[in-house]
Length: 226
Image (cartoon, rainbow, N blue to C red; front, top):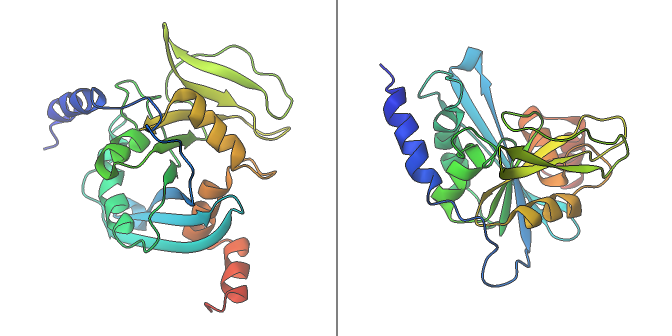
């Protein structure tokens, strides 16, 4: 039996430890990583992929994939408990330590302010940003169609993040700080890492690795890894 009451209490406690400020020293990343989490075999296996890119060239320098048995079923609002074990597994395999991590999922833009980017960010003590493809909670003003259009994402009088249209004729992204970074910097770094696609390069490459997309296959051939 899953004790969702205890999980909810844990979320509320952990959320109190989230830091929504930039590091004391200016963030000058050498490596920026993206993480993508998915499920295989009907949800029985959790797959986490991390792609590490060199900044500012945004070239892929390392990738890792971890597959572990899924530990808990899908429960709305508690997805990070399901995803974090695989993220920890893949994170421990990295040879290049990222200075910043973008996670395909929510940061504080969560009903209890603990999406997967915040939950995992607390565990690794590295600045994290949630880059989600859909809204979990909050409201925003109408967004213009132009690429680069931005609106604040609010829950009552609290700003949770940003709604940002990265590309014309594409649905917007929902960007929120995970941990160890400010609201403004969360948007800034996603903008800096976007190169004409809907997703910023770190999470775009993580998705490519996880799904074995053609771009990743080409990278493997060119780098002599296949």
